[in-house]
Amino acid sequence: MRHVPVLLTEVIDSLQLKSGMNVADCTLGDAGHSEAMLQKTSPDGKLLGVDADPESLLRAKQYLYDFGEPSLPAGRRVTFVRDNFVHLKEIISRENFFSIDAILMDLGWSSSQFAERGRGFSFEKDEPLDMRYGGDGPTAAEILNTYSQKELDLIFKNYGEEKLAKEIAASIVLRRGVAPLKTTSELVEMVLTVYRGKLHSTKEIPWVGGIHPATKVFQALRIAVNKELDVLKETLPQAISVLAPGGRLAVITFHSLEDRIVKHFFQAEENKTLKIITKKPITASAAELEANPSARSAKLRVIEKL
Image 1: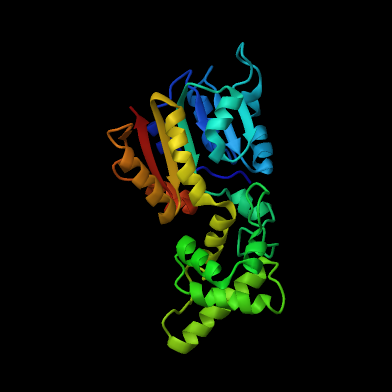
Image 2 (image 1 turned 135 degrees about the horizontal axis):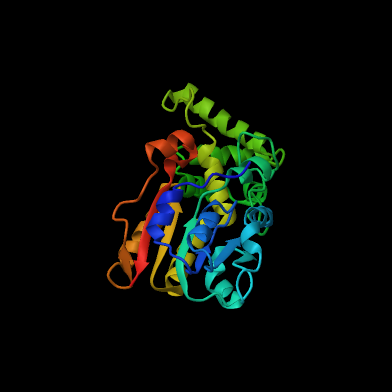
């Protein structure tokens, strides 16, 4: 199933796309946003599509096949690049993709990555604890089995805002002394055990439905494995530097940690190099939420380069 892009109309409208514009999608995914961007910039606008996940690139190439046929003297309308968008300036220089009028950074993870990749992103399936986006660096299992209790505590607390971070970290260290953690189901059961124990001892943190107790731990691990917050901090100034004057950058975040970074960066540069277009973040309409509940946490912020 193809991932449904969030805030699609709002992104296209906010970027003020016109025929002939060059655009960059830093998180290509299933290319839902990119397809709309290419349609809006037809017939000769070009798109740079970047994704670190090789499977995402293969899927995107299929979805954008009609735009891949040579339609310009210079060649194809779409340039596909397998890389992390933290290397944005280097990618643009290498691909000679200059004069960029619009950039999109959608920081969400596609439904296909959670459901079909088998990398342990979801606590609802029993899979190896990998969680790497592009296949580089330590896996989630390696972090869980080698980091100190204090390091794990800080990961769960800082990246997941998990209330029981200390207890979960201690439980993991105790467990791995007997046998290493290898699968998502093993980690989920450990988190649930900690929550059940806390409930029985203090009756402070019950769980009888709603948000699953493992949600924040999985989010924290994914962020740590992929260095998501550091990548975002490094990429934002690069995006501004490569935009043409009058060009716009749109960023979609899905949790408060990301949104805070984007908000503070925009505010720090306001009136110096940037004009903030969205004084308050744009969120999904009631109609979109009904059709796509996963859009409930999405926030769109847009700036224009002066």
